[in-house]
Length: 169
Image (cartoon, rainbow, N blue to C red; front, side, top):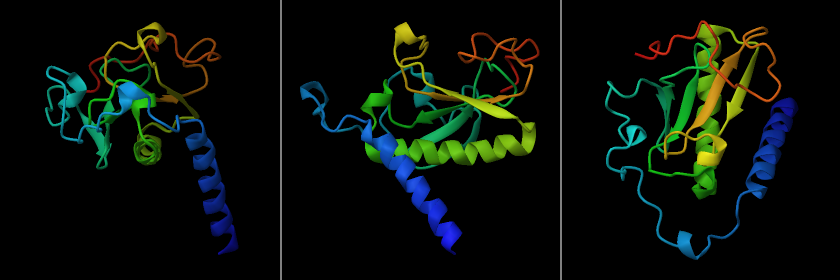
């Protein structure tokens, strides 16, 4: 019982540290009410989670869904995507951040059962200058194995040679 409580307390401390770095107040441009989860942007790939020709969902919760990446860096590469149209990680409120990380942990367990990775790369390309290709926030969760890239320092820079871009279909 004490060990379980200690682990829970450590998780809460870690989440509090994460939340500490989120903006505490919204600026004037962000004072608009947050769109509801069902609101979407016209033509946005990630705003159409129920279309199986666009998205193959691994798991989901009320605010986010985990989908297989269309151009995986490695087999099992998924993206954690908000249901509402949010462009930047910094638009998320505290509840959404917790929801995203909760779903990431759930998705990781499912990936572990199928792909047995030795590690993970977790990444967000927040802005075009950072390499974002779709104007809808998505958090990459990439299973990793020793030797899948020549030098893993600095993250994934290209797809692994044996990754099938159509594997998500």
